[in-house]
Image: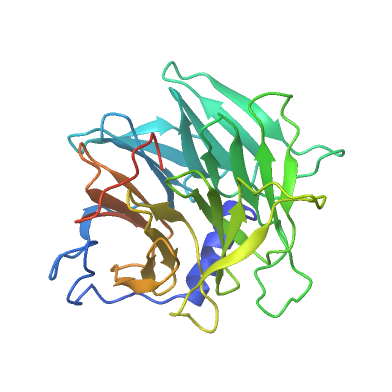
Length: 314
C-alpha cells in the first residue's frame, strides 16, 4: 500500500458501514443465523491476520504501526510496536514476516524480539509499498506491491506488481506480474498449484499457475487466468483486500460489500456481512473452525462449518 494511514482513509472513503449478517448462511461454510462476533475494537485500521501453530493469532494495526498477538484464550497483547506500516503478515516456522508499506520493506521477527530486514527497496530493485505476503511449501514467499500511485479507479495506467522471493539464491525479488491495477490480497490454493491475487480496483481474482504443464513451446513468466469475478461491488469497484482459503479449496475475499465466498472452481457461493468493512481474514483456533476478520477499528470472529487449510499460517 501507499503510506499506511492515508490509504486506510482512502479505502474508508469508498465504503460505508455494513449491516450485520442476516442471511440464511452458506452451505458448508457458515450455518444459518451465525454472525461475526466482535473480539475487540478501538484499533485504528486492523489488517494482516495469520493463525499461529497453537490456535492463536497475529494481526496488525496499520494506523497505530503495531502488531498484536492474541493467545488461544483470547488475550491480546502487543507483539511489536513502531512498525513502518506493517500490513500483511505471514509465519515461516517460528518467525513472523511483515509487509511494511511505508517502510518499503519486508521484515521478520522472532520470539526473542529481534527484528531484521529481509528485503527493502533499492535503486536497482525499487519497491513501492509491500502489502500482503504468503509463503509457499518451499520456503519462498510471494508479496503484492500495489505501489504508491493514488487509488484512482479511472487511472488506466495504474499498475502494481506481484513478486516472488525464493528461499535460496539471495533475496532478489522476481517479478511475477505487473498488469494488475491494484494487486492486494493473495493466497495459495490448498494443493499448492495456484497463487490467487485480487485487485482492489477491479472485479477479477487472478490465478497464477505454479505448476505449469511441460510444453515444447518456450514459456515466459507465470501463466495467469481469471479465477472468478467478484459480483458485489462498492461504488463500481470491488475494494478487494485480504483473502483466505479453507481445507476444501473455497476462497474467502474481503471486499467493500463483505467477505465474498467462492468454491474451489470460482463459483460464487454467498457473502458474509460484517458490521464494519472487512480488510482481511484468516482461519485459526484449535480446530481451525474460526474465521477471524479484521475490519477497520475492530477484530471479529465467525464460527464456521468449513475448516482452515491443513498448513501453518494462512
